[in-house]
Length: 270
Ligand SMILES: [Zn+2]
Image (cartoon, rainbow, N blue to C red):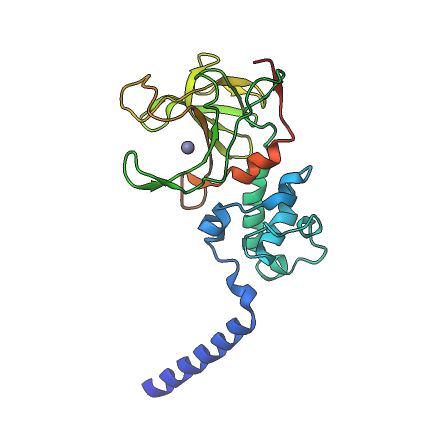
């Protein structure tokens, strides 16, 4: 009897393995898809950065088709699919993935550092530095994107809110210095760190509008002593976090989202 059962189990195993290898898509969406590094790296690429809007349907489908890397994607690749195989096969998981993109894209409105109306003001610079090595406070990956403004003294560059939202955290953090954390209506958490100063006496629960002045770029942080500056170059650290089934704060890469937002930039006189 036991031997029969073992043979039966072996048969089921062989059949199942055959099915899975014939259907590689089966593996593309597991329950942790939106929590793995491939998803979190947000490799949206130039086509998405240049698009007028980020469409969660089209991008979710393209990410699945192109293995979470849209750097080679064309404008057409990002259009919502007419027939969506992933949606047909695993509706629940596709829906979650699409919703995760929707959460990320829904409230993005402005690049966080306004353009200067004065031609002589040096431009800020940034690169894709998500998960680069950081060592202060222990070995870790960089959870964000640094917008460098070290050509001007601390406090020169204004920092505005990327989204509408509610102030969730504000004040001194050892790593983040003077920071402000804003929860957008869709659920995305935006973290702005190393500020020189705040534009208002922000309190938890305050409502913020997209484009509203939050504070000024600085170099505060990397110390337990509130107000410490000068431990690194003046820059704005932008972090973006999702709340998922398993994580309270799951960092995603803001780089391509910032690239996309560059065409939505306010102008300030500074
Ligand atoms: Zn940073």
